[in-house]
Image (cartoon, rainbow, N blue to C red; front, side):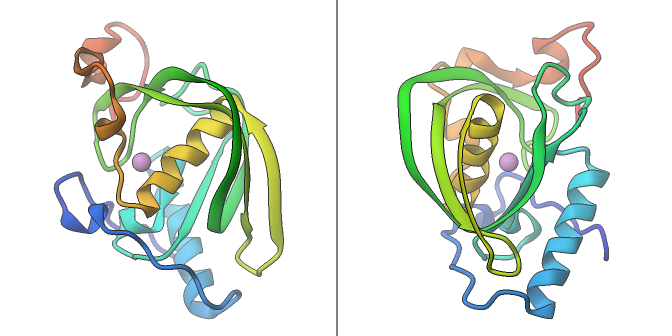
Length: 177
Ligand code: NI
């Protein structure tokens, strides 16, 4: 297991559409996921998508117990999600602040669906089917966007709500990544 370098916005690999995983449980896939977990935890991220470590496969991980980058957010169980599909969503879009390990030191106000259902598989091919809301729904939408080459700044509706964490939230103990 190893911490891999995280690509930053501007790297064209972050703009590519990733390919579905064809085979589960392979050493290649398990090593990728173990390295992604090490990388995400080392950076104190809430989620990480394979393209962020330069791998164009439809694999994301996310989860949060207590995270200094998101002190207000609710808990999300640690999840490995392969070939995810967002199946349905309900209600209005809701705006909240997001950051991204590929856009270090910044936050933006991003509209997302408040409630949704998603499906996918774990690394061994076991199906996952969940209905979620709030921060869990937000983090899934953010990570699945990465698989389609979309970074959160392109979803911000009001660019006055995009900036450096320390300037947007002065005096708050939010890690500036
Ligand atoms: Ni991100």
